Every structure is written in C-alpha cells, then in structure tokens.
Image (cartoon, rainbow, N blue to C red; front, top):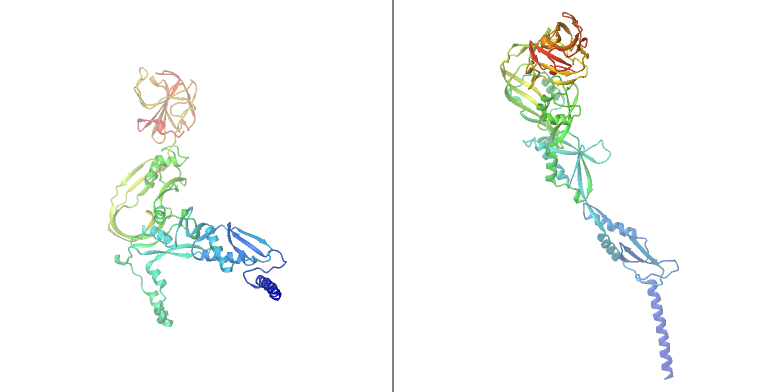
Length: 530
C-alpha cells in the first residue's frame, strides 16, 4: 500500500512537470502566441476609426495593410473616394497572449476603412469657355454638349467635334476642333494610299506639270459647293478632367440649354461716318432709351456722337459662339452706289439730286461669314447682271456752313418760339422768336458773322439790328436800348452789336431774338450751338 502511494506521488509530479513543459513549449513555439522576451511592448491592440481591427505581435506591417486596403477599395470604382483614417495602437509587454491572423486583421481593416468613407468624388469633366464653366459626368456628355452647339447651325449632319490634347499646356488640357465627318472617318482608316505609291517618280512630276499649265476657267453655276463650307467655335474651349461631388455636376440637358441659349451680353460698337443714334438703334435692334441708359456719355437722343467713339451695346449671344462660312446662291434687286458731285460754292447742308436711281437685277454666288445668327461679312464670288442698275447722282456743297451762338450771356428765358395764350396788348399771338429777360444795358452779340441789313428803329420792336448771313439766314435782335452798328457793316460772330433794353411794345427789359430761313421764321434755339 505504501509503495502504491509513492508511485502515485511520483506520477503526479511527473504529470505536473510534463504539463508545465507543454505550456512553456506552447508559449514559445505555437504561432498564435507571443514569445516572452524582455524587449518592451510585444502585444499590440490596433483600432481604426475607433473600431478594433485586431491584435498584432508588432506593427511593422500595419501601414502596408492599410495602404493595400485603400488601394483595393479605390480600384473598385473610377471615382475618387475620400475617407477618414484614424489609427490607434496600444502596446504592452506580455508573457504570452493570443494574436490575430494576418488575414483576419486585413479583413477587419477593410471593413473599418469602408465604414469611414466620407465622400465619393465622381470622375467628371469641366468645360471652360471664357468665364463660363460647366461640369459634366462623362467625356461622352462633353462631346454631346459640343456637338449640340455645332448642330444648332450645321443642320446637314456634315461636321463633327473632336478633342485633342493641347500641346501648349503644361497639364492635361483637352481642346476642340471641328472637321467634316467624312474627313474624320478617312483619318481613322488605316488603309495604305496606293494611289500615291503608283503615281510616283516621273509620273508624279508629269502630273503636277500638266495641272500647272491647265488653263483656268470661270466656274459655272453648278460648279459651286453651295451650303455650309466650314464651322468652328468662336472661343477657345478647354476640357479638363476633375473629381467633383455629385451636386456640382450639371445634367447634360440643362448644360446644353445653358450653352446654346442666347444671353444678353455687352459689347462695343465703334461709330463710323454717317452714324446716328437712331440709326445705331435700328441696326443693332436695341431700343434708343436702352442705348442711352448703357452709355453714361449720352444724355438724350440729341447727344452728339463722333467718328471712332465707342458705344456699349447689348447683343444676344450664347455662352459658346459659333462662326461659320456658307456659300449661297440668290437672285436680288440691287442699287448702285450714289455718285456725288462736289460744288465748292455750296454749303454742306445744300444738296440737289441730278439723276434719280433705278434698281437693277442680278444673280449672285456669295461666301457669307456668320457669328451665330449675325452676318459678319459677304464676299461676292460670281455675279451675273440681268438688268443694269442706274446710280443716283447728287450734287452737294463742300463749304462748312456758319454756326450760331446765343446772342447774350446769361439771361432767363421768358418766352419761347410759337403760339402763346396771352400776348402783350398790341403784340402778335404767334411769337416769332425767343425772349430772354435781362437787365437793360446787357451786351448783345452777333450770333454769327454777316452783314448788317438794318440798324435803328423798328416800330413795335423798338430799336433793332438785322444781320444777313452767308448761308441765307437772317437774325434779328429787338427791344434794344442802344444800337452799336450801322447798315452795311460787316460783323464777326461774337462781335458786340447792341445793348439790351425795353423799347417798343415790351413788358420789361429783355432781348427778343429771331431767325429766318429763306424768309420764313424758324425756332432759333434749334440752330444754336451754345
């Protein structure tokens, strides 16, 4: 009995030693446990965005796992994915402990990164035209937008838009060019041009020689290529790849409407000889009051404009303008240009028609350039006159006519030209001039140079001065207190000819001023420069 007891005691000790040895071996040799060494932290808990992704024996490969997980997520989409990544590691030194497998850690990292996706930026394309930009979802939508701008005018489905890298730009910027669809198809064809190979050497030289000596002949009406010859964008178009939020991308139908619809845009009009404000208003289809509103230097419809002056006008234009050239055939009545004959004895205000015009009739082929719907230029390349036009012949004067100024300084206008309700007793109800109230003795000046026709008493006008001018007009100055010139005397514009007064039929000190054209009274204020 005692022997058996000692045997069991030895057996228990042996079992305990074996168990201890097995535990030590497991701690040191099994892969899921960390070997205990006195080297510092050897057991790391890793968290990403607050979620535990695993326990690792070291963090040497952690960045690699995260980088590869991000790459995998990004490869699953063409979009640019933004995500929050906040990595936390907590290390400690342990004798032994269970760590997670690499595959488990990688899987957990993948899940944690996906849960941290903050925003997905879509691959898109920004189209820029001057200061206008629009963002589209794909390169196909870019092509559709540009083609819609062209198709607005190229109704024959003859032209197509192509994109190419802009070699002048540092970054990848696409620019546009327009070409005929047939040409684009031929450029994409990889077949060899055997005609060029056959027609080589001496054969090519002879061919070129015969082409150069072939006599040129005038084109017949059927030889012309009627219709749209060329079309292109008026402005430079830039297309750049970008990554944007969905809210920043414009629907293709909205973009086409924005780009092709006419917008009111300010532009500059340069005044040329013969222009008037009313004429510019009609030519540009802008109301006269709107034209005056746009230009601060214009006070009203009578404002003076000068050759070379620039006026702001508004014209309807789309965001992306189109220029094109068309070859047109038409038949029309036409007028010859007016023939002018200068007469140095006449003033520039005098003209006389020497021959009345008569319209002609012709057949025409013309190349016409347009910017959107506005004609820019017209070049007639073939013309056949069916009936000759007769030109209008006009004789015109070359002498600069005299100018007229207000005949006194200051003064308050007290009566205008024309009918008046309550004239002074003895005076006419139709006022033939303009009155300015002014103290007696105010200097009166010649409104323009000329010859004094009358100087003295004028009945109801009191003391008067009449002056005849070279352009046939006559000015009259009445109710004077003193006359300073005499009949037959020559005076210059601005010469002092009298003093104002209150003589004749008058209600107070003032100057009465009249102007006659061919013996008829006119409103003198219409002829005064200042």
